[in-house]
Length: 251
Image 1 (cartoon, one colour):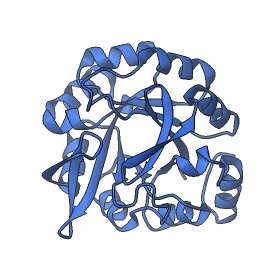
Image 2: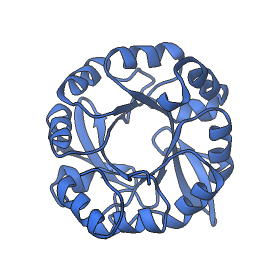
Image 3: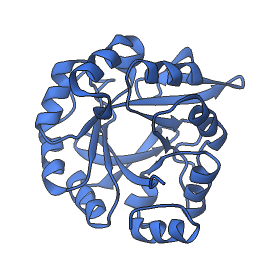
């Protein structure tokens, strides 16, 4: 049985880790390099670094900060934000990223997924999807959730797999930062539609939410930010509890 992964996420803006609710009202959560090292020491399975204002500000991800984080950790490291070309990916991989996460650029030009996956291998390409319910239908949103589209979440998930994505990182904007739990119904449906690993994001508030997303949401990994940053849940204790609930994790 494949082990389930616990993934802390560093949302970075202006060189600092931040966290908000429903993608707004951001507050400072600490130094990204220090936090990254802490999570590696705590036996987190992977780390995700998202430069959340790169796309909106039309600039590239902070390669020098990525390098500092990479040097501080020894776990797989995914970087996203402002990535729109093969050159962007080369810079990040050269600076220590193991995988890259693409979002808005992939929606605007879906061939980008094919190009990156052909060049670097699908295992290197994570497609992040931010979506929320609009009139009862899950719709994809871009630019850190600020730009709505008419694209159906589930159709897009199927397409990104067909185009060569190695993994999907799905964030429910409705659940993000609420600490009310993950969007497990939507996750379970995506999981049924695709055969690549699915990372749940948005809504973690306690240990039970992780148990629920692995059991009910059929997620392969669960990502969280504020509950780890502010010490509400610690990675080692979370993993011990998951193990007790017969969920396979790497201790």
